[in-house]
Length: 366
Image: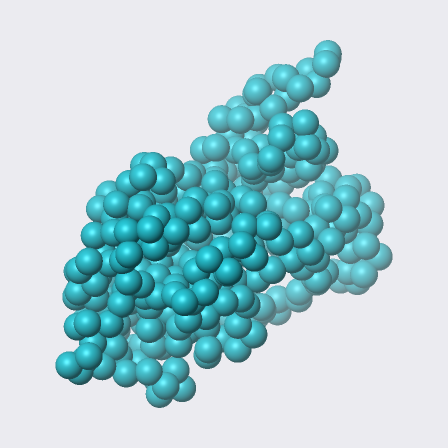
């Protein structure tokens, strides 16, 4: 949608974001029938979920375009509960799509390096007659281009929450230029209000909710006061830990579940003090950056993409370290509330990345 709004002549063809496994298996055939033949098409920009090999084989007219493959995640290191559950075909399709692409783009350096370094061991799953040196064929085509986040203007009254900003703004773009902190309107009660912790992630196993709720229950055991908002989208199989956590944390809960209104979601982020990730899988992390933009103090695993984006002071190595950090902030919530966050979210904004995307979607070159 962002590219369509900002790149002239951009046509978008999509499928709904559900039934993921079927999308990965069959989307190419569907798009081969729905994308019209058009002599003015110049560039084909596709998600790595699409089997690009199949699409360009079915549609030779599309094969002649400049083919850009964009990786939000990669299936070679995507976590599964048991290794035998990993479907070889999904990763294999991504490797094949890279081979027929002209440019392969990753949303983070972690995504790119983890993919390229895993190709060789992934291909060893083939029992015999294995292809070799595929990473050497793919690597020269690769580049990193962060996902362009459309950050909200958290100063607008539509959010209906008082924010005092500690940030500089580029008047020509209205984009924040440096780090920022969004403070609630101060009053005599504010200094005694409990720490407000937010967890804004998909309710799935790869976001590791067990570690998050375990840390909160230890805060309860130590009789520390806090509030929690557990946001994010739910799907068919919600991990059982959520229902149990809701029962045990009931008196601490301010918000629970998906907020269909973006304004309501942003309001909660502006009200919260700390945002936590416990993910076993993260190749970029829009939710964490949005929360930081709204003034939340971040706590992230010292792994995955996080060290690429967040300074060391926001990273923890073990669940015990996470729990200790939260205990300290519960005892002194002002530490989070008055902290000026050392993350320049504007680097990940469309205003900052637009020129690179325009160059990528031009006819020649990466």
